[in-house]
Amino acid sequence: MWGRCVVGARARSKGMFQIMKIAQIAPLYESCPPRFYGGTERVVAYITDELVRHGHEVTLFASGDSQTSAMLEPGCDYALRLDGQVKDPLVYHLRMLDRVRRRADKFDILIPTTCTFPFLRSAGTRR
Image 1 (cartoon, one colour):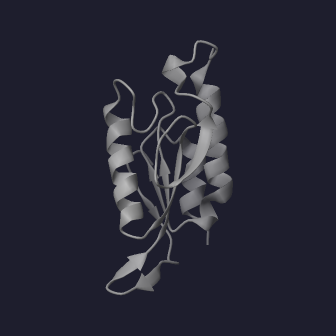
Image 2: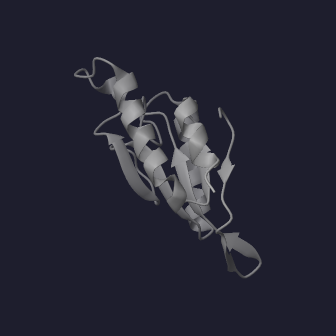
């Protein structure tokens, strides 16, 4: 599933293109865009805001301190790398990915930019 988009068939027409409900799934180590280092998170932020600007309904699954024009669904309060209270970042990612999996049928496309683990594979194969 790494780097693969999962696409549904519910996109709606708006003029010459389809409006889609998109779930953008970012790593939780840095905010989107990052305050410091974070190439992946910076690209996710740019793409997410551009998709919103083009009229798509985007939900960004990211850290709660992210700044976005999309609907933000926080997986944690702050970027994990900067939160000294975090002992195991994997727990936060698994909780967030479980929420994505449970809501997958609400989106036309899932765009994972983090390790999505095998259990998300079922999100793209539902009928």
